Image (cartoon, rainbow, N blue to C red; front, top):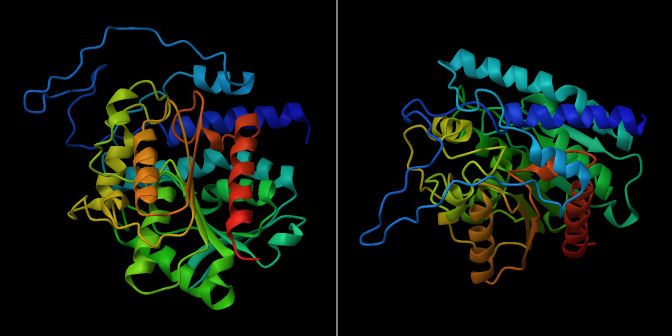
Amino acid sequence: MSDHSFAAINKQLSLSRRMFLGSSLAAATLPAVERAEDAAPIGNLQPRQLPARSLPVPTTVSKELQAVIAAPYAPEWNALPEDAAAWKDLAAKSAESAAPAVAAIRERFGLTVEKTTMAGVPVFVITPKEIAPQNRERLLVHVHGGGYVLFPGEAGAGEGMMMAGHGKFKVVSIDYRMAPDFPYPAALDDVMDVWRVLMAAYDPRKMAIFGTSVGGALTLCATLRAKAEGLALPGAIGPGSPLADLTWSGDTIMANAFVDNALVSRRSWATGASAIYVGQQDPRDPMLSPIFGDFSGFPPAILTSGTRDLLLSDTVRTHRKLRQAGVVAELQVFEGQSHAQYLTPSLPESDEAFAEIAKFFEAHLAS
């Protein structure tokens, strides 16, 4: 595939991610979105009033990333599907939109992708044309993002394919059940069922679990649950920009509102989607919001975010809590990036992000 044709596919994926990862959907109970977020006093502490300003595209990132940063918010980024059928229709459209880019990733890296099931859960087994010698007995387990509602099927495996291609690892990407048909704990149950199957076939010390956004949250939740159930933990984890706090309390939820051109604000699709997943459960439950869990005994972790990411605070807070628990944890934050934009194929920054994650896994997984 030529650089020109891949660049076109890359542009299409960037659009699809803004349309379906960082665009549409807000909870039905939320008020109409305004240009500024509500900010209430805390006791006698008054919120800071900021002057209106324009935010330039930074010159400190690659030309390719500049184009992503300059992109406008997706149309109807806060529109709400009216019922379950409309949510599922949106999920189907997200898969259709991502399909050409996922195919391009597969072709770029010469990957073999096999669809199968483990414990009845659909998975995609991704094998690079050459597995690095040090990784031949290792396996990565991928949990996709999409707000617990989007990117069903192979459309959710793109990040796993990028990791397999960049890191030369074999990867299993989990196509877990999603809301609205399957709210909590269906997704986490599926991840755990696959983990149990893989534990019987691989040394857990030679496996890592990783994913971005809700994939990062599920990575953390699966580790918490494995610890609670007395199961073996993975040798390392890679929660990228994790949606770790479903109370939406982190500083950058407000500070990066409308700065992030992917998620945009807490009143975007992600809040509505996560509310459907949570249902009547307490959002502070660590199996929903892992930031409220006990990270002691966790395996080494690498976290990834960007300076414009609405979930930068979730990522930073998770990193600090891991460090406070005595866990080996690295944090990479990329200049100018909004939520999950390091998943955009062919960006120099994306290549760098995956190279760092691969290097971390190689350093911490058992040989």
